Length: 126
Image 1: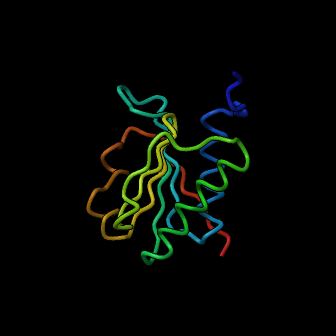
Image 2: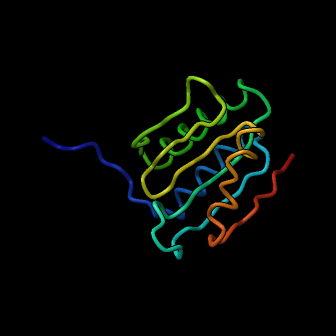
């Protein structure tokens, strides 16, 4: 029995695919946090963005999954938060995408929580 073939891509490439999926649905405040040098980090990268409505947050998360699957044949290991659309986590083990509404993002402050990470702000093309 042969397993489904997955194209092996690096965590850096995976984070870029996630960013593309976010930007495709006009996500705002897209940030890539490189956690590879952070002691005891749980992933290589966190990719964060904000959406303006429940509908947009849902569309962004769908776009991330579509973009990653289309280009790497990978499905998320786990996803959380689809029911309430305030903070959707799409976990690819080495890279975790976080799609927030603005209030939840400000409340949890992941950028501050992981302050040792190298943070790259992505400019949207709107």
